[in-house]
Figure 1: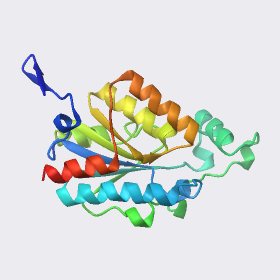
Figure 2: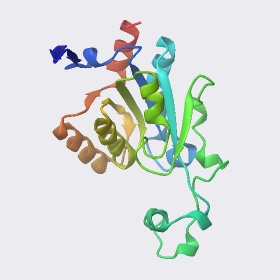
Figure 3: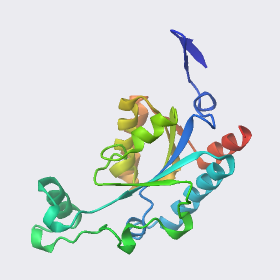
Length: 213
Protein backbone atom coordinates (compact mmCIF):
# COMPACT_ATOMS: atom_id res chain seq x y z
CA UNK A 1 0.00 0.00 0.00
CA UNK A 2 1.31 3.46 -0.90
CA UNK A 3 0.24 6.80 0.58
CA UNK A 4 -0.17 10.15 -1.14
CA UNK A 5 -1.64 13.34 0.33
CA UNK A 6 -2.78 11.35 3.35
CA UNK A 7 -4.68 8.81 1.24
CA UNK A 8 -3.93 5.09 1.01
CA UNK A 9 -3.36 4.01 -2.60
CA UNK A 10 -3.90 0.26 -3.18
CA UNK A 11 -1.28 -1.22 -5.49
CA UNK A 12 -1.99 -4.93 -5.16
CA UNK A 13 -5.08 -7.11 -5.02
CA UNK A 14 -4.44 -7.71 -1.32
CA UNK A 15 -4.34 -3.94 -0.77
CA UNK A 16 -7.55 -3.34 -2.72
CA UNK A 17 -9.74 -6.05 -1.20
CA UNK A 18 -11.07 -5.73 2.32
CA UNK A 19 -14.27 -7.34 3.56
CA UNK A 20 -15.85 -4.07 4.68
CA UNK A 21 -14.91 -1.95 1.62
CA UNK A 22 -15.42 -4.51 -1.17
CA UNK A 23 -18.59 -5.68 -2.92
CA UNK A 24 -19.37 -8.44 -5.41
CA UNK A 25 -21.25 -7.57 -8.61
CA UNK A 26 -22.86 -10.48 -10.49
CA UNK A 27 -23.54 -9.27 -14.02
CA UNK A 28 -26.43 -10.57 -16.19
CA UNK A 29 -26.35 -14.23 -15.14
CA UNK A 30 -29.83 -14.66 -16.60
CA UNK A 31 -31.60 -17.68 -18.04
CA UNK A 32 -32.21 -15.99 -21.39
CA UNK A 33 -28.57 -14.99 -21.77
CA UNK A 34 -26.91 -18.17 -20.53
CA UNK A 35 -28.97 -20.37 -22.85
CA UNK A 36 -27.28 -18.61 -25.78
CA UNK A 37 -23.77 -19.50 -24.56
CA UNK A 38 -21.86 -22.74 -25.08
CA UNK A 39 -19.98 -22.28 -21.80
CA UNK A 40 -23.13 -21.68 -19.73
CA UNK A 41 -22.57 -24.59 -17.36
CA UNK A 42 -18.89 -23.88 -16.70
CA UNK A 43 -19.32 -20.13 -16.20
CA UNK A 44 -22.25 -20.69 -13.85
CA UNK A 45 -20.08 -23.00 -11.75
CA UNK A 46 -17.20 -20.51 -11.56
CA UNK A 47 -19.48 -17.60 -10.72
CA UNK A 48 -21.04 -19.86 -8.10
CA UNK A 49 -17.63 -20.51 -6.54
CA UNK A 50 -16.99 -16.78 -6.13
CA UNK A 51 -20.54 -16.14 -4.91
CA UNK A 52 -20.24 -18.91 -2.32
CA UNK A 53 -17.02 -17.42 -0.93
CA UNK A 54 -18.56 -13.93 -0.87
CA UNK A 55 -21.51 -15.27 1.10
CA UNK A 56 -19.24 -17.13 3.51
CA UNK A 57 -17.34 -13.98 4.43
CA UNK A 58 -20.36 -11.65 4.41
CA UNK A 59 -19.36 -9.60 1.36
CA UNK A 60 -22.06 -7.22 0.16
CA UNK A 61 -23.45 -8.67 -3.07
CA UNK A 62 -25.42 -7.09 -5.92
CA UNK A 63 -26.93 -8.69 -9.02
CA UNK A 64 -27.85 -6.81 -12.17
CA UNK A 65 -30.25 -8.04 -14.86
CA UNK A 66 -30.80 -6.81 -18.38
CA UNK A 67 -34.41 -5.94 -19.12
CA UNK A 68 -36.47 -5.09 -22.20
CA UNK A 69 -39.19 -2.49 -22.47
CA UNK A 70 -42.47 -3.31 -24.22
CA UNK A 71 -42.15 -2.61 -27.94
CA UNK A 72 -44.40 0.46 -27.76
CA UNK A 73 -41.98 2.04 -25.24
CA UNK A 74 -38.79 1.24 -27.14
CA UNK A 75 -37.07 4.28 -28.62
CA UNK A 76 -34.57 4.82 -31.40
CA UNK A 77 -31.58 3.22 -29.71
CA UNK A 78 -33.42 0.23 -28.26
CA UNK A 79 -35.05 -0.62 -31.58
CA UNK A 80 -31.75 -0.31 -33.45
CA UNK A 81 -30.07 -2.53 -30.86
CA UNK A 82 -32.86 -5.13 -31.06
CA UNK A 83 -32.60 -5.16 -34.86
CA UNK A 84 -28.86 -5.79 -34.63
CA UNK A 85 -29.06 -8.46 -31.92
CA UNK A 86 -32.00 -10.28 -33.47
CA UNK A 87 -30.52 -10.15 -36.98
CA UNK A 88 -33.46 -8.53 -38.74
CA UNK A 89 -34.18 -5.34 -40.66
CA UNK A 90 -37.87 -5.27 -39.76
CA UNK A 91 -38.96 -3.54 -36.52
CA UNK A 92 -42.21 -5.55 -36.59
CA UNK A 93 -40.20 -8.76 -36.20
CA UNK A 94 -38.32 -7.86 -33.03
CA UNK A 95 -39.34 -9.48 -29.76
CA UNK A 96 -38.54 -8.15 -26.26
CA UNK A 97 -36.26 -10.89 -24.98
CA UNK A 98 -36.09 -9.83 -21.35
CA UNK A 99 -39.49 -8.40 -20.53
CA UNK A 100 -40.69 -8.18 -16.93
CA UNK A 101 -41.81 -11.50 -15.50
CA UNK A 102 -40.45 -13.64 -18.35
CA UNK A 103 -38.41 -16.77 -17.50
CA UNK A 104 -35.51 -15.49 -19.63
CA UNK A 105 -35.05 -12.44 -17.44
CA UNK A 106 -34.54 -14.39 -14.22
CA UNK A 107 -31.18 -15.16 -12.62
CA UNK A 108 -30.24 -18.80 -13.23
CA UNK A 109 -31.53 -21.01 -10.38
CA UNK A 110 -28.05 -22.13 -9.26
CA UNK A 111 -27.23 -18.51 -8.36
CA UNK A 112 -30.60 -17.48 -6.93
CA UNK A 113 -30.17 -14.18 -5.03
CA UNK A 114 -30.83 -14.24 -1.31
CA UNK A 115 -32.98 -11.78 0.60
CA UNK A 116 -29.77 -10.16 1.83
CA UNK A 117 -28.64 -9.44 -1.75
CA UNK A 118 -29.86 -6.71 -4.11
CA UNK A 119 -31.10 -7.19 -7.68
CA UNK A 120 -31.10 -4.14 -9.97
CA UNK A 121 -32.64 -4.07 -13.44
CA UNK A 122 -31.09 -2.07 -16.27
CA UNK A 123 -31.61 -1.12 -19.91
CA UNK A 124 -28.00 -0.10 -20.53
CA UNK A 125 -24.74 -2.02 -20.78
CA UNK A 126 -23.05 -0.36 -17.79
CA UNK A 127 -24.37 -1.67 -14.49
CA UNK A 128 -24.11 1.87 -13.13
CA UNK A 129 -26.26 3.60 -15.75
CA UNK A 130 -29.88 4.03 -14.70
CA UNK A 131 -29.60 1.83 -11.58
CA UNK A 132 -29.11 2.63 -7.86
CA UNK A 133 -25.80 0.72 -7.82
CA UNK A 134 -23.51 3.73 -7.38
CA UNK A 135 -25.69 5.15 -4.60
CA UNK A 136 -25.85 1.77 -2.85
CA UNK A 137 -22.07 1.27 -2.99
CA UNK A 138 -21.20 4.78 -1.85
CA UNK A 139 -23.72 4.61 0.97
CA UNK A 140 -21.82 1.57 2.32
CA UNK A 141 -18.44 3.22 1.71
CA UNK A 142 -17.43 0.58 -0.86
CA UNK A 143 -14.16 1.24 -2.68
CA UNK A 144 -13.60 -2.00 -4.63
CA UNK A 145 -15.99 -3.96 -6.84
CA UNK A 146 -15.38 -7.59 -7.81
CA UNK A 147 -17.07 -8.35 -11.14
CA UNK A 148 -18.24 -11.74 -12.44
CA UNK A 149 -20.78 -12.75 -15.09
CA UNK A 150 -21.53 -12.33 -18.79
CA UNK A 151 -20.63 -11.03 -21.22
CA UNK A 152 -17.17 -9.48 -21.01
CA UNK A 153 -17.26 -7.60 -24.30
CA UNK A 154 -20.89 -6.48 -24.06
CA UNK A 155 -21.49 -5.34 -20.51
CA UNK A 156 -18.55 -6.05 -18.25
CA UNK A 157 -16.06 -3.89 -20.14
CA UNK A 158 -18.33 -0.78 -20.09
CA UNK A 159 -19.13 -1.45 -16.42
CA UNK A 160 -15.42 -1.58 -15.55
CA UNK A 161 -14.76 1.67 -17.43
CA UNK A 162 -17.73 3.35 -15.77
CA UNK A 163 -16.55 2.13 -12.37
CA UNK A 164 -13.18 3.78 -12.99
CA UNK A 165 -14.88 7.04 -13.96
CA UNK A 166 -16.80 6.93 -10.67
CA UNK A 167 -13.64 6.32 -8.66
CA UNK A 168 -14.00 2.63 -7.84
CA UNK A 169 -11.34 -0.04 -8.18
CA UNK A 170 -12.83 -2.71 -10.45
CA UNK A 171 -11.48 -6.23 -10.07
CA UNK A 172 -12.30 -8.51 -13.01
CA UNK A 173 -12.46 -12.18 -12.06
CA UNK A 174 -11.37 -13.29 -15.53
CA UNK A 175 -12.30 -16.96 -15.49
CA UNK A 176 -15.68 -16.11 -13.92
CA UNK A 177 -16.50 -13.77 -16.82
CA UNK A 178 -17.67 -15.36 -20.08
CA UNK A 179 -17.56 -13.93 -23.58
CA UNK A 180 -17.45 -14.71 -27.26
CA UNK A 181 -13.79 -15.79 -27.30
CA UNK A 182 -12.20 -13.31 -29.71
CA UNK A 183 -14.31 -10.33 -28.64
CA UNK A 184 -13.74 -11.15 -24.98
CA UNK A 185 -9.99 -11.37 -25.50
CA UNK A 186 -9.94 -7.93 -27.14
CA UNK A 187 -12.01 -6.46 -24.32
CA UNK A 188 -9.65 -7.77 -21.65
CA UNK A 189 -6.59 -6.59 -23.57
CA UNK A 190 -8.09 -3.11 -23.82
CA UNK A 191 -8.87 -2.99 -20.10
CA UNK A 192 -5.36 -4.18 -19.25
CA UNK A 193 -3.89 -1.52 -21.51
CA UNK A 194 -5.85 1.23 -19.74
CA UNK A 195 -4.52 0.10 -16.37
CA UNK A 196 -7.42 1.17 -14.12
CA UNK A 197 -8.70 -2.30 -13.29
CA UNK A 198 -7.20 -5.26 -11.48
CA UNK A 199 -7.49 -8.87 -12.63
CA UNK A 200 -7.73 -12.13 -10.73
CA UNK A 201 -9.05 -15.68 -10.96
CA UNK A 202 -11.85 -17.41 -9.09
CA UNK A 203 -9.34 -19.50 -7.14
CA UNK A 204 -7.17 -16.52 -6.18
CA UNK A 205 -9.99 -14.26 -5.07
CA UNK A 206 -11.83 -16.92 -3.09
CA UNK A 207 -8.62 -17.80 -1.22
CA UNK A 208 -7.98 -14.13 -0.53
CA UNK A 209 -11.51 -13.51 0.75
CA UNK A 210 -11.37 -16.49 3.08
CA UNK A 211 -7.91 -15.48 4.34
CA UNK A 212 -9.27 -12.04 5.27
CA UNK A 213 -12.17 -13.47 7.27
